[in-house]
Length: 472
Length: 102
Image (cartoon, rainbow over all chains, first blue to last red; front, side, top):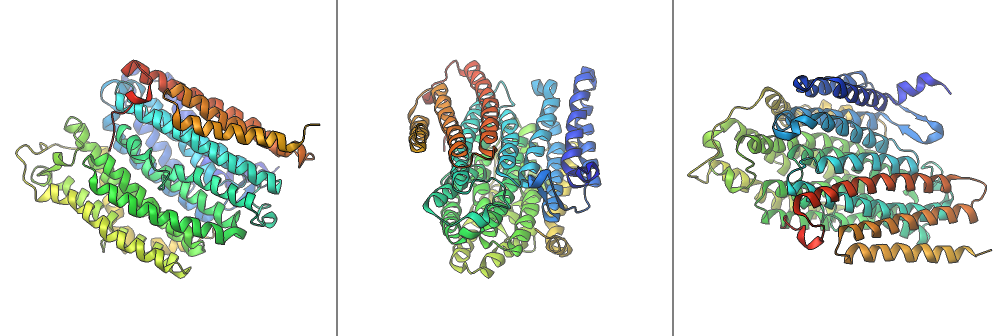
């Protein structure tokens, strides 16, 4: 085998593995009083990995087990950048209390989930997909339960790991039936053997419900709110954008490549799931008063919009999916950054009432939060409007006009609950608003990056064109 | 030789017993055991399909091996989290793990 080609094709994963090992070793040998440098070291390593892998690459490795395309490579770069922002946001949380001793674990586990997500994105075989998914899931469960002495965190971890186990069981059952009817696990070989027999439809349903658990689509969303509420805020941010984005891309490539002959069956199934997901998530989001729980339902409804791009099942759909994830990362990480900052500086306040009068004391943070919420709701001229527009356009072009209409109506409903928070911050008076505080430098950098993303990603159209020029 | 259908009936039965247990058990460890039943039924499926339908290749056997390894890792993490819950609230009954609702 040509060993050089492994390094050029699998560059993203290999550089992350090297970063993982380096951080692990440095964490072992660094004296206790210098552990605070670990965040800087991890961020620099991740930034280096982003820079050296920014060039698009393409190819197959290990007999088709691993495939990558320019678009997948772009998505990996985007996810790495999102993780970098989360690293910057987590420094405050990790420097306090008993998590400070274990901060190395946070970085190591995050690297390892990121590697799993990358293998999941580039899987060319169901075995690879499964291993990538588990490599991404198991460390995330550890991260969710990271706040060892908080009951919420452990409860969230238990709920997460049990539903993850259950969902991977369902997914494996589906894969086993697919294997029984076709006799192969390679994505390239399966389509020509599929005949849409009842067994294969059943396997499609089981497989889809397994991945839908990871994407937290309704009716597989029941773990989401509790896990998001109980997990540390940085981990919630990671769960809601990074792992969701990778799962959506993996689902799309599999439905488009492997289940291509069964497009009639899965497009009907996904249409129903999208309508139910967006509607139910919107209705539940209105009822929430805890901001992290609220963001959980918001992220469920955003997953529904992402699925519109999957439903389109075209090249345009693939491009709009990656673009949506990029914009969603910027907006959602800005919201979670503000929630994180407030939680750190105001003794864990995460209720909506706590944000009353937030603008009068912390005007800059309130502005960041407002911009991000406008982007999530899809108000022009922010990036969220364009990402929603491209997703809707892709689905509309493929002929799903009714679904697009229902999604549009739901966008207007979502505006209501996003604006509830804006109202709390700007209009509702409060006797004891959150005191004015100053953010640390890493947090400020991350919030500035997010705001720049929210404003520029939509207006600078070359971003979409850059993604559009890439093959799936 | 035992026909293939018998194995498949066994694995399907295990699968749905696992799903039933997952939704009805009141103790987290019992839920974990139910999930293990689901994962093991999948392993049986892979081994049987490979042995009876596609005996010239080994993909199914390998998948079963990997699935066993991965599910062992997942169970280890799950038990670690359950121990952590026990340390926090001195209990692992489902009805006591309901601090978060909504």
